[in-house]
Image (cartoon, rainbow, N blue to C red; front, top):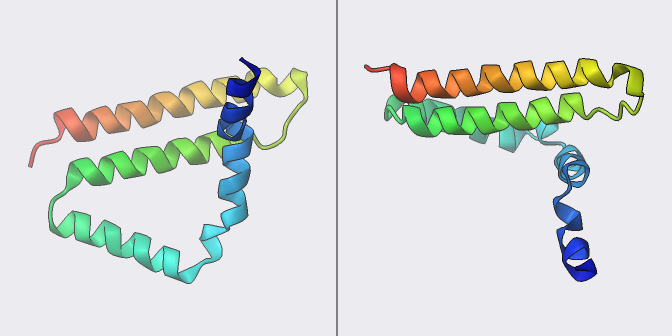
Length: 104
């Protein structure tokens, strides 16, 4: 069991958020240009499902990074929980709308 826990250690939320933060993709011009190109191609080819899924995953990672911003104060943990639940619900509603209700 201990070996399994050691193997799963890199998949903890803090480790994943730190890895994403260390990549520093927001200051990489090639990444930004690729992301813009991806969005334009998805819009031109009408790949709404792919674009919706990628935007939802990106929003979820951003939400986890924002909520998990190193705040260890237990008095403010309920605020982070409400923010996470509200933001997660908004992301899920966006994905459901784009996948099931939107028809062009």
